[in-house]
Length: 249
Ligand code: IPE
Ligand code: IPE
Ligand code: MG
Image 1 (cartoon, protein in one colour):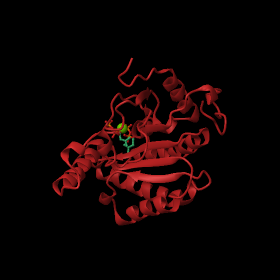
Image 2 (cartoon, rainbow, N blue to C red; image 1 turned 120 degrees about the vertical axis):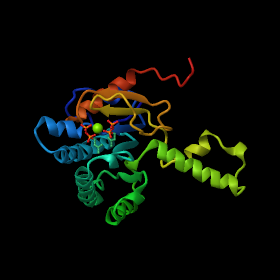
Image 3 (spheres, helix red, strand yellow; image 1 turned 60 degrees about the horizontal axis):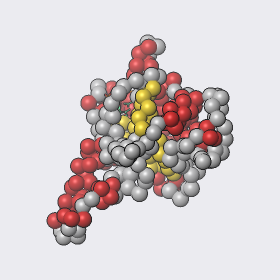
Image 4 (cartoon, rainbow, N blue to C red; image 1 turned 90 degrees about the vertical axis):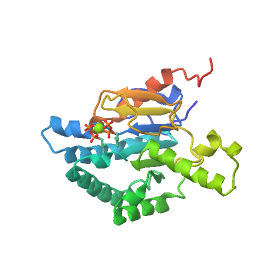
């Protein structure tokens, strides 16, 4: 039975009797639609979404989630209009400056998954600093997926493993599931149990393709900037009702 550090704030749902997911993934989607509904620029939706990210991250840590992976920017999101991409990069920069202090009290370990080399130098430095400052903490691991794509991640793993095989460091027979997992950004971490997609879209959009083989997906008809702690509770309740068989009976 999972132990909870605190009770849910506003849902009235008591999670303490439920089987908690160890690793939750969230596709933080719907910022643009949220802004459009209010007659605001899409960037206003991203700003509102960043606040929700902070709130939900802290909440996950408080209820005892061990790993949280959030999808912030995909390898395909570069195809958006350049003013939207620029606004997102500015938001990441100001957010990551604050984040250096933000998660200290919660002992959260911050990691970035994805190809950071595509970002401006000052953003890469902030990502490196956030990782360095938090690496010895003992709380929840927060993976922030930035310039992340599941296919890109697998291609990188294939290249690394091919190098090892070509230089005779491993034999072809040694290539197995575990070896591939060990060459992904999430190496050493358990696969996600629950993946939540707000905004109602029924697709992975290239998120954790390999790792989500047996993840339970919960699609929610709510836009990310409107997402509340009680919505996370509802997703966990839904997850706890699922029968996970992993191909068995
Ligand atoms: C998710 O919200 C944020 C990013 C992909 C960076 P969207 O910007 O995709 O919002 P919608 O889906 O257009 O509403
Ligand atoms: C997925 O959302 C990426 C992030 C939330 C960062 P998208 O909005 O990019 O996905 P599609 O275009 O709806 O598939
Ligand atoms: Mg979207």
